[in-house]
Image 1 (spheres, rainbow, N blue to C red):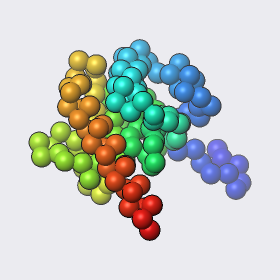
Image 2 (cartoon, one colour):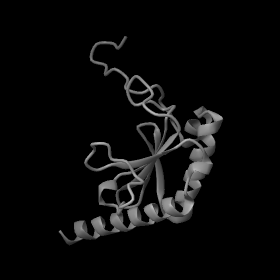
Image 3 (spheres, rainbow, N blue to C red):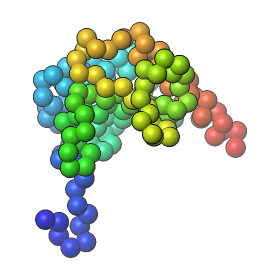
Image 4 (tube, rainbow, N blue to C red):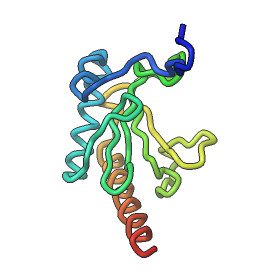
Length: 145
């Protein structure tokens, strides 16, 4: 029960570091998270990683993407299984084949993965590279203002 003037917790965890986050994950999610983190670092060597909402977010100028395991709840219940790779500006990515999901959202697009084998590495890399180009383009627009 929250104390007076205390916000109720929306999440089941409160990590202080990436290491603490990784230690919390069940082995199946950990394998997918580590694979996706490495893929992102391989594609964006100068990316910065920071916990936000208790999951890793990756940023250059603005947030490019995030990795959200199903075991880290948003709200009171688990809404999916596996690990979600989300793109902050997903609505701006070329996705003619409908690989990414928007499900009524206006901006954030994502794909869920149950296992490392589910990840189409070349396709996911292409989305990451395009997300970096979008980030760069938005930063240029902001600098011109």
